[in-house]
Image (cartoon, rainbow over all chains, first blue to last red):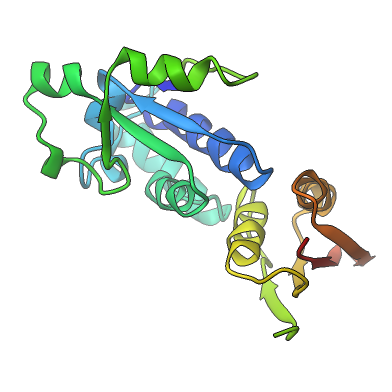
Length: 132
Length: 75
């Protein structure tokens, strides 16, 4: 799947699906690009904003509190889990250059760097392809 | 070698019970048995299906008062 969004709510959906698919034995590749690439920098998932009703960060804070109360795993934990379940995570090389993101800025789970061809080689093998 | 592994997912919400079950399974050897306890309703059906998807054997699913115990043998 392509992770284009840097919004917490959308990235949550992406990593929940990725974890579920990996747990069901499917091969999963996440290609992080643009805002999604900026999101997977070290320390950023815990500070991500909401796509709606962010209210200057208040909304995101409220959702995080509700998630803790409801025992819903935070985004950063889902990213670690996905890595442990063997999800392949690729950082977009073009976005890294464009936005000045260095390899050491990225979460260690995004150890691979690639381009559109890397994504397509994985995508054409798959039956499910998502753009988040 | 065939020692039984037990994990608890009590209180966890979707998709953590499934994730924790698969994480435990990945660390186990073929033939080893995992016993998962939990109380997340949907996971009671989704965990057995996900295990069958990968050729693991669901030995039993027991539910009592909203708490369930799933026993799986790694295939």
